[in-house]
Length: 351
Ligand SMILES: *Cc1c(COP(=O)(O)O)cnc(C)c1O
Image (cartoon, rainbow, N blue to C red):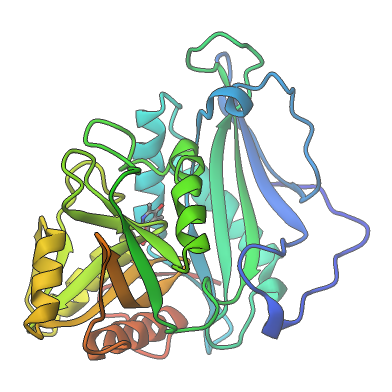
């Protein structure tokens, strides 16, 4: 693979002050698409500002999709990436929904592996940190007509990160949003596409001004059923059963979500994937059955929910940082870091 070297490497940030998505490594992987060549010209280049025609359709109509994964250092010095096959498959599904030609997975995978080998010194070691991987595909055709572009850019950025929210396992306060919606069945909610995030900012900012951390999105039809949080899927433990909204077409099918469901069931904990009404959550809390709630996602890992506010009422799970959240956090991060056996072959190991 072609690698364009840079003369001077960047200074690495202090591992204690990484935050999320503030620092980027020295290199990135890029690949281009046009109608006559298909996907071609995969190469590693310095991560520097990139020239784009300002008429590029992604800048006007948001034709673009992305992914998020994490790489971890292993005790044996190798690198592991958590379930990348699931991310590549989802990237292709998202691309299809946005009329973007899917990237050839082997080429994307090879680009990522080569990039990780080159950037291995950027993988932070400290507990709670990781090297975040951000692949994306954006439409670069310079035409203002509203139709699918005939040119695209695929790229992979790497960013050393700490925890997504302020601290690990710090409970967040959620506001169930009963006016604005994130997604509806038939819309683009299950695609990781650019517009979903831009359209969520307004309600998220209002919630933050009102003293909440995140919005809990409800279904678009009735504003009654819990769907998910900004970049996390949501789980509630009611009594001894863990309940999470079923994938109805408006919810992003999280890989952390799928992994948690599998781990819980394998450990004898019943999990129900179904509709879950805000009424049921408030009632469960009143009857002492709302034991815990947590969000799941690659960036946020497992984030406990400290309170949920809906229609002026605030309820608090009995355990602000519950046993199930702790179990999942510990198990997932230990599998990822190679300190627990990876029985399900979730880690892709890169030598
Ligand atoms: C990315 C994302 C998630 C989490 O998915 P993971 O695969 O677990 O990282 C959940 N909800 C939304 C809206 C997302 O964009």
